[in-house]
Image (cartoon, rainbow over the protein chains, first blue to last red):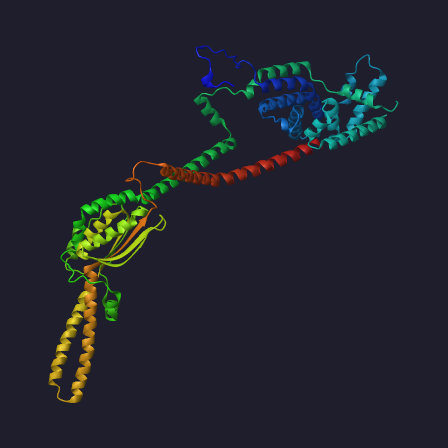
Length: 189
Length: 398
């Protein structure tokens, strides 16, 4: 390694690549996280709130909160996606508290049926309605697990971090929720 | 419908997944690209704008910074007060230099210091002061009649030169004043022996008496000398000035006690007693019977004994007035100022560093004492709020 007294003599110009224009690493990481999770976060929040405009507002607020805290994320405390969904979960629950509304996980079945594709078969449509009905019969916490897994696409480790349980416990609960959903779908028939 | 299998379930859930509106997605993309400008990037405020913003703060929000400001001011006040206290302590502690100043002045004004004793009671004879020789009679006489007219104590802590007032001088004429002094000198541990011999020289120069002396050589912690001296009162000032030149004056204490009343009273009683003896002698020569002579002789013996006791008491009182008792102590090592010793050195640097660290530790302790309860309360509030939030969020979920 060069020491100051070993530096070349006669060099009167130093070329330095300025990094001022380059965005900080935290901004880049946040940008990547946003692009990866935008729709997932919205889906999860919308599932919790069952209100499109409110879901948009809460999703934006969650991303803004995450943006402001982006420098404080600690890799030792979990995955970045889990961290973001934790923020989104708190924002959504705060909104629910504020409005005093009970969480409803599933989207409105009527809305879903209204948006059914024209080429969709009757059997497919009936199956989707049955699943939506089954979701509505689940316990809210189980519905949240389903939303985190299938709407947000989190793995068991990330779900555990978001809801604050161990990974094995999250897996067990999720398996139980899926089983109950299937039973509920069959019962809905 | 057939029972739903796992794949069909997952496919149905995928179809049920809510999707954001394209407009919302585009708007959010733009906000993220801009870095949420309205909230996350605060504009630089001008002083006026900052003031307006402060004014617009809700009282609840202004409470925290105001509390912090008040706490900071309190801490600053406590620190300032403690510093003021410590600086006054330092002034007392650093009396060495001022004491040295006093020493030089008093040595210059030594004659003035000696004036009060002059003309009062020049010692008739310099004899060792003996506590035993005082006798019971002196104690009795003192107990009955010794009511000090003006007991005075003067401490010399180096705060200024010793100058006795003119009124004192006139009042002290023809009065019997008992004076005693304590002086502590500081010197290097290896110089204690030399200083002790100089003490003897000064005592000899002023025709004083060394009642007792004890000198211990050795390390700084043990090098010490103690003297109990009798110095003629008329030369006490000069002698004290001489002692002050031996070493660094650490402390000086002067005490005066007016013993005029017991001296006068004892003298009068002695005169009465002598008159009584003369009278008894006259009676004895005129006694006609044996029994009468024996009675007069018995009374005469008692009166002579009383006169002897009174004489002893009077002698002792006069000795106390003519000879001043001086307790002199020489200590080695500790606290010797380096003003005379030369440049500021490693030891001084370590001392100063220790002092600075001590002050820093004290200030930190004070700050902790103020901040710790505030922090504890804030922590409890934060924990309580967090617990409440968590529970209410769980309740909101169902």
